[in-house]
Amino acid sequence: MTPPKIALVTGASRGIGAAIAQQLASDGFAVAINYAHSQAEADALVAVLHDQGHQAMAVQADVADAAQVRAMFEAVESALGRVDVLVNNAGILKPAPLADTSDALFDQTFNTNTRGTFNTLREAAQRLNDGGRIVNFSSTALVLKLPGYAIYNASKAAVEALTQVFAKELRGRNITVNVVAPGPVATGLFLNGKTPEQIATFAKMPPLERLGQPEDIAQVVSFLVGPQAGWVNGQVLRANGGLA
Ligand code: NAP
Image (cartoon, rainbow, N blue to C red; front, side, top):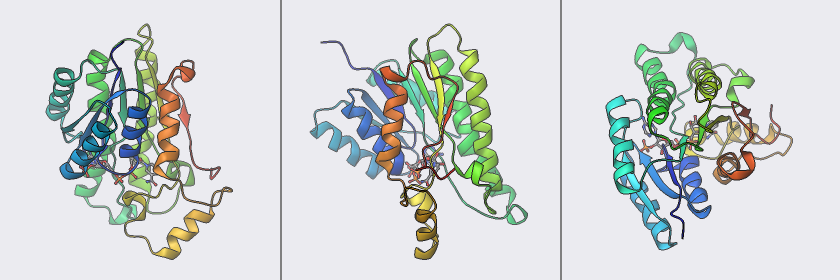
């Protein structure tokens, strides 16, 4: 039997990342589940995947910290092997008008969303197996241009820019680098701090008239890292029910 390919999913303790880890495990990958703080959730997901007969591990690292990201890759390589698929899902959203954004909030948003992606991409350049796949995460918020999203959108615009150049810099390695940019998805990141009325307004916006579910996005990632998407490279896929 050929050994499974290895997928490393950042921010996989909860939300979309957890659904991606479950989906990629079902697709046959051995999965490394990165988390920053939610160890109990990450361990519980590993236990579920083990019960299903999949290979999985949890690995703690703050993606904003380059040394921790390096140690994360080393831990995954020791336990599972060299990484074939990197999914840069870890991210934060703390909407605030630009004028009210503190230096600390600006730094936190860019350090997690942008520097976090940069840190893992830089490691992946040395460490990913040839023929691998990378999926980064942006947001449909970028094209909605709603007030309160200036800093978040800027951090995600940078992720799209990194992706499109990095895809070219990996020439000759047969590695694709793409972006998924979800619309509103029913996770803590979107739901926390919103009134039921605000949530209902967002849910009505796409012509499909519902919020996305984590599994909707996990299936898109499954496509992008699978054999059928081998000719898709350097692209942004806005998975949002037709919202924008
Ligand atoms: P979520 O439910 O809040 O989960 C975020 C995950 O990221 C958690 O597992 C969290 O782990 C992890 N994380 C946060 N900061 C981290 C760090 N510094 N290092 C490592 N892990 C970290 O968020 P989500 O909705 O699933 O979002 C996933 C991605 O989709 C994000 O990039 C987000 O910007 C993007 N997105 C989401 C939506 C949406 O509506 N939900 C829409 C568009 C784009 P801990 O709990 O351990 O900290």
